[in-house]
Amino acid sequence: MNSISKLLMVMAVSLSSINSFAQIKEAKTATVKIFGNCNMCKATIEQAGNVKKEAHVTWDQNTKMATLTYNSGKTNPDEILKRIALAGYDSESFLAPDDAYAKLSDCCQYDRTLKPAAKSKATHDHHQAVPSANATAANASQLRSVFDGYFSVKDALVKTAAATASAKATEWVAAIRAVEMDKLSTAEHTVWMDVLTDLTANAERISLSKDIAKQREAFAALSTQLYELAKVSQQETTLYYQHCPMYNHGNGANWLSKENTIKNPYYGAQMLACGSVEETIPMH
Image 1 (cartoon, rainbow, N blue to C red):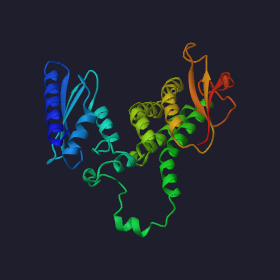
Image 2: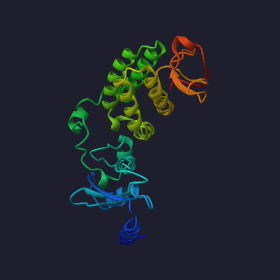
Image 3: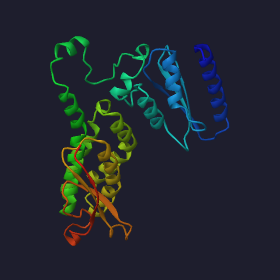
Image 4: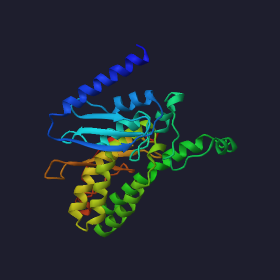
């Protein structure tokens, strides 16, 4: 199929998608800037963003502006932009993983003006003797502070120290917001974008509350999100995914620990040893 045929097919699909949204009461639109260069970028951006009966994306090569038309009952602009970022294209909300950008064709590799620590080729060449292990360490450090913050909050809950949990969660929220997503691996980036909104919201709930019961409720919700992240990220030590069968009226709840010994954050001294190790996540 030649390039003209591909473009005609994209146009046909676009018209069909637009018509399908015309009858959806929940249809909304948003306009965002997405970086790219050419018609090949246009096809990739639109294909990544489009989901039948959920989202339709139209990207303008000249202005770099995209119109997102979406069913607000099923999706939102963040979810659309996450998919586009994973395809290699930066927006002001989500940066593409470096390895996804690197896979783009030469003609599609746009100037990444949004990268916070972008370096010129001259600077890169000047420091080319720096071991590549440093880059790996930088990637790992992006999430290290996130896990450190989690364990600090967990330890405070074990001690039933609501004020300490609140203070530690405030620091943790700052660490979460400081993560540079473009420095994460593709696997980390994918999970991070999936959990970021709920993780931040639950961490903020802990930081804003002095009620230990409410803090523990938020901690139970976010522990599942941290588990998903732990499974795909580099860890400097073995982690243990532990389970309390008694919490939440017998429905149970899980948490991550750096220790094999059970120290229950949902009951503290009341039932400190209640629980079991459900899974061991090895250092990797």
